[in-house]
Image: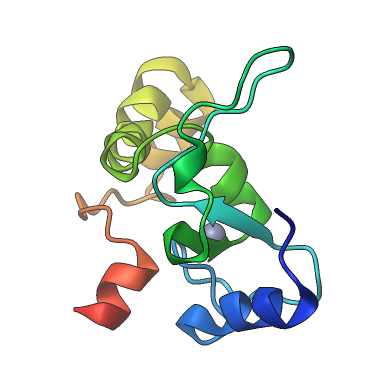
Length: 120
Ligand SMILES: [Zn+2]
């Protein structure tokens, strides 16, 4: 099911023209329609959870958020993002070096998605 142009514009404006997750402004037509509860499409296999392909379950997302979220549930993706700081500290010497020179400050902030801030 492809969205009609008016439906797609309505979805873009769902959170004031911002990505539902990171809050970046969605410009032009290069944003994605994300399934909040994921569906799983695989070549040569039936789509899993096709019932999740409906407008109420779809969120306007920038490409980096949509690609990063992939098939993950919202909570799974939240945990995965929160773990990025540990990954940077464990595996990226350049990150640790920049941190040691005070260029990076870790805040310990919770991962809160844009749509949670605007609907709370
Ligand atoms: Zn985003």
